[in-house]
Length: 437
Image 1 (cartoon, rainbow, N blue to C red):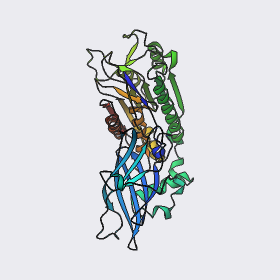
Image 2 (cartoon, one colour; image 1 turned 30 degrees about the vertical axis):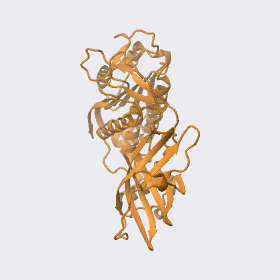
Image 3 (cartoon, rainbow, N blue to C red; image 1 turned 135 degrees about the vertical axis):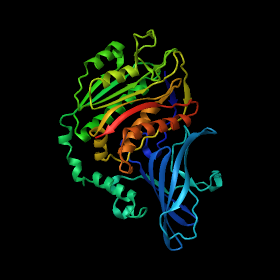
Image 4 (cartoon, rainbow, N blue to C red; image 1 turned 120 degrees about the vertical axis):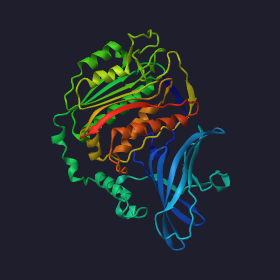
C-alpha cells in the first residue's frame, strides 16, 4: 500500500514547496569580522546545490565556490533544515595564501515561531556562540541576472555564466531562434496523458489528488512548449474501478508518432506468490471492497497494453507500494519535500518528447517496500518531477535523456525516505529502452 504520513509544518525554505514554477536561485548576505559576504545560491535538489560567495579582503575581491547537501530533522521541539557546505574552491586568483572554511546555513522553527532569516556559521559543530543571522535572504528572478550582476560570482568564460545568460534571455523574451521552430516536428504527433488516481481512498486520497494536479499541470505545459496537441484521460473518484481502467486502456487510440504517459497514484501491493517485480495496482476506492484479481491491475499489464498501441514514446509510472497484502502502517513526522526549477530550455524538452523513441516503466518502490507520501504528494512523484525539471534546466550541460531522469528519480526518492523520520527505505525500480533520433 502507499503509505501516508502527516506533515506538521511546511518549511518555506527556498520557496520550494509553494510552487513548481519557483526559481532555484537565491541571494544571501552576511557579515563576519567586519567583512561583508554576498552569496549566490543555486539549488538543484537535496543532494546537489552550490553557492558562489563574493567578498573583499585586504583590498582584493574574491569569489569562492562551496558545494551543499541538505539535512532536515527535529531536536528539542524545534524543526531544522541545514545546508551543509563542503569542498570550498576559489574561482578568482586574488586569494593567494587564503583559506576559506565552508559556510553552513541553518533554518530553525517550531509551531510557535515562524521561520525567519537563516543562521550561518563556519563551525561544523554548530556551536550556538558561532551562529549569526544572515543580513538578508531573497529569491533571485531570472530577469535580474544582468551580466554585471553575474560577474560578481562567475567568470564570463564559465558555462554557468552562459547558462544563466540564456535563462535571463528566455525570461526577458530574447528567445533563441531555434526555439520557435517546432511546428513541423510536432504536427503529426499528440501527447496522451492517462491518469489513474485514487482520490477517494480515505487514508491517502488527499496526497493522490495533489499528485494528479501536479502531473496534469506539468504535462499540459510541456505539450504547449513543444507544440504537441494534448489529450488527457482521468480515472478517479467513484469511477475508480478495474472495469473503467481496462476500458480506457482498450479504447486508447495512439498514432505511430504519439507520446503516451501513464501515471498511477494510489495503493499498490503484490501477491504472496508473485514473481513479477512490478506492483499490482489496487483499483478500489473503498477499503470495504474485497481485494481480488477483479479489483486489481498489474502495472506490467498496463505497460504491455500501452506499448502494443504502437506509439513512438511510452512512459509508464506508478507511485504506490510494492509490498505484501495487509501491511499498512502510518507514521507522523515532519519532512521537507523540495521542488526546484531553473526554467526550461525548450530544445531539451524537444529532445525528450519529440526526438526520443521507445518505452520506460518505473515504479516508486522495490518488492517488499512502501511508497511514502505527504500532503505535498508522493516522494516518488515529487522526485520524478524534480528530476525532469533538472534535466531540462539551463544549468545542466549534459544532453537530456530519460535514463538520466530515471536514475535521478531513484536517487532523490531514496534520499527523501532516508531523511524522513520513521520512514523505511524506498528504492524505485525501472526499465528504460529509449533511443534518441
